[in-house]
Image 1 (cartoon, helix red, strand yellow):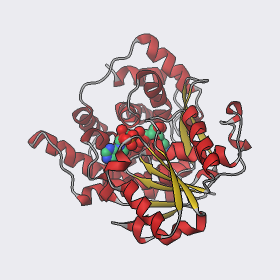
Image 2 (cartoon, protein in one colour):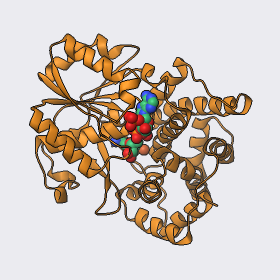
Image 3 (cartoon, rainbow, N blue to C red):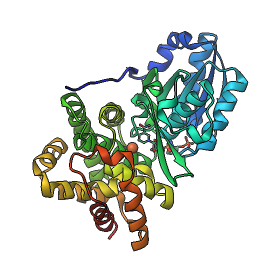
Image 4 (cartoon, helix red, strand yellow):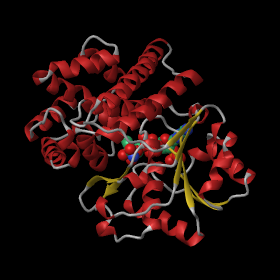
Length: 372
Ligand code: NAP
Ligand code: FE
């Protein structure tokens, strides 16, 4: 038996947000916009949202302080603003950070919960509606039931996970991504790739999630290989609207995958790299994924062969050399850090999703190989 659930209405295409302004009316007469500090004001997404809301007479307030890798404190601050301002729904504009921040705010504002109980996912009963406007192509948060926050109590990133968090609508317009810097483009694309690959390596994978994953992997790899070529030939990358469209679709498909399968060891290990070493989320996944696939190949080559096929490359090594070209100089990890991070990762809920269950020593080996 298997199941597929993804209740978000997904609307795609140039100007899809302004063209569908009337949809906002179902969610109330006042919205809170949630963004990062700068990009939403520059890439046109915030202007489009304001234009759409004003065209249908909806008032709004703005919380524009979500940092990369949002904190629990940020979620509570935004929730307080939503309550104080009497907002009835939230529009999240930005990368995964503002979208995840907004989702957590939606949960806390609808049913205020003590911080100690926030990550008790079974406790949540209500959330304000969230509409998502992604401006990076990577996390797929616009179609997932997750919100990932920096959790200082456990010193890691922890997930809120409840179907209440699926956004009501995701507006996918690649035009907001035309100005995305090359490093953010690469890191976020690798995050999308990692979602789809980890989805195929998850115990919860099924035929629907695998179909979405294969399509997503093919799209991301096509554009990442183009970026690799452009960097080699020109030393610079200018992606077309069509490339951005492919990455955005791949990212949303990757989100649909992990909404079914969860993520696995790669995300579990990456959380420590972000929490303790401030390594970007997608980059962390990219540094680890090839080495984790090599580990699985040892016992279940049929599984990694399917991933390699979806990537349209001959071997895992080809994929790993692509990552070397894109991620350039690696950070360093001490023996002590490798130990600490592997113990942390093995305790995460994500590990339980692994189809081939790694040991703590396996994870330490992956860290060692990835950073040597
Ligand atoms: P991000 O932290 O949201 O954004 C990274 C940077 O890109 C920020 O500096 C941001 O600037 C900038 N930016 C965003 N859109 C831009 C645009 N169109 N043009 C120029 N700059 C732009 O990065 P992300 O990788 O998208 O999200 C990472 C977060 O998502 C992590 O916390 C991760 O754990 C989470 N995540 C969630 C899920 C899920 O299912 N919920 C899945 C995977 C990852 P501003 O700050 O100024 O906006
Ligand atoms: Fe991710």
